[in-house]
Length: 74
Image 1 (cartoon, rainbow, N blue to C red):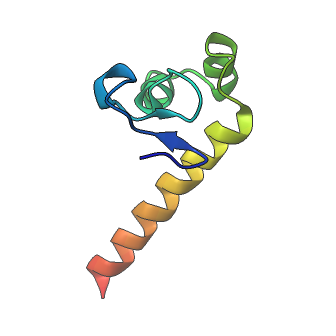
Image 2: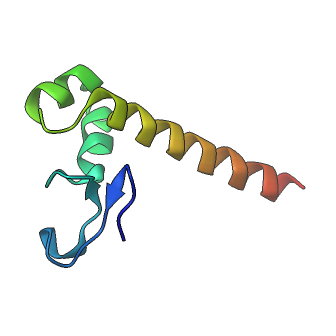
């Protein structure tokens, strides 16, 4: 599976979801933020990921969470 944000391929990190056209797992951004690091820290350490990619991933996560929350309330 490949889109403009996330790529999943058995040939890249055994199918771990990565930022498109990188070898950086999307989970790494979440781990950084959970560990108290900033998006800027993450981007400094993984320069192949753009700020736009990082922000879009967080926005996607927010949208999914809000959708699931609204479905559970209804």
